[in-house]
Image 1 (cartoon, rainbow, N blue to C red):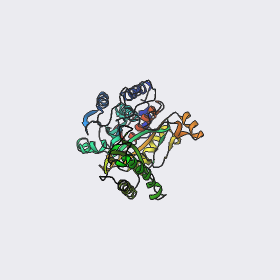
Image 2 (cartoon, one colour):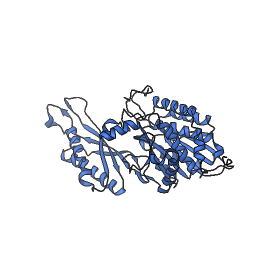
Image 3 (cartoon, helix red, strand yellow):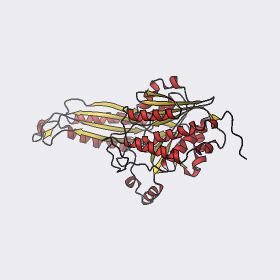
Image 4 (tube, helix red, strand yellow):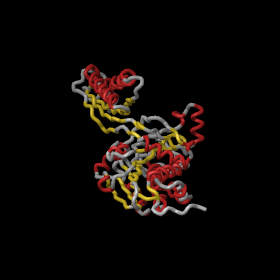
Length: 422
C-alpha cells in the first residue's frame, strides 16, 4: 500500500488540461461506438494513447482487447479493467457528440469506463515517484456478450503479462454523479440468454384451421413464462425472466411456419438458476405439445454471465481509499444488482480478489428531484436506453479520481519516498 497522502499528491495532476483530454476522448469514443468484437477503432485509439503515456502495449488480446503495462519497480501488480464495446441501439439523446454509427450506441457507458481508465493511466505514469509495482490496464472487448473477459484469459493473459494481486474496475450507472456505490459479496446476477424456436405449420390467414399457428403458440408461451418467478420461485429468492424479443411472420395474411423468442434470465444462486431453466424448458415444450406442433421446439444458449462476487476485504480496503479522496459520505451500498458483469472472470481465473463499484452518472439535482417525486424509473434513462447519457461532469473527474485512488490503495510505496512537507 502506498504511503498516506499519496493519492492526494497524485490526484493533484488531475488539472484542467488532463480533464479536458479525458472529456475530448469520451466525446470521441461516444461518437464512434463499435459492437462487441468489432471494436477496432476504439482499440486502436486506446492503444495509441497508452503508448503515448509510456506504457508497453499489446493489441489483439482476446481478439480485439488491449493490454497496457507499466512496470515501476518491485511491488504489487494491479489490474485496472475497462470494457469498451457498444450496443445495437439507435441513439436518441440529441447530444452534439451523439453516435455517428447508425444503429450503434454507447448506451451502457463503456466509453466512460475507457476514458476514465486512460485518465488514471496518465496520472500514474506522471507520478512514478509516488508508487511502485505494476499497473496492468486491460481494455476488454465484448462485455455485452459476456465473452470478452474469458477471451482475454484464454489468450494467455496472465502467462503473457503476469498475474495481478487484485482486479479493480467501475461501471457508470444512473445514480448521482459524484458518488460511488459498491456492494461487497454477491454483487451482480448470473445471466442466461436463450434463443427459442417454436415450429408450427403455415397457412393462409383466412384458413387458420389448416395451420398450427406459431404466433399463438409463442404468445401463450410468453404469458406462461411470467408465472415462473411469481409461482415457482420462493419469495425470499430473486430471479428475473424477461422475453426481450419475439419475431414471427412477414405479412398480415400469412400464418408463418415458426416463431422465435429471445429470453434473458437473471439468478443469484445455482439452485434457483437450475429451477428457472428447468421451468422455462418445461413450459416451452409443454406449450408446443399443447398446440400440436409438428416439431419439438429448439432451445439454445446465446451467452451466459457467471455470478460476480466482490471480495469483502478488497472492498473494505478499496472503498476506504476512495472515500478518503471523494468523501466517505459519497459512498453507499446499493445491494446486489440484477445486472450482470463478466469482470469477475479476471479474478476467478487467477484466484485473486475483485472490487468492482458503480460510478454515478446523473446530474445530482435531476436525480434528487426525480427521487423526491418518486419518478426515477420514468424520468431518468437507465443503462441500455437510447436516451442514456451520463453527464460529463462530475462523472469523468470522479471516475478518474476513484480509479486512481483505488489503484494506489494496492500499489506499493515509492522506492524513495518524498521528504515530509514542512
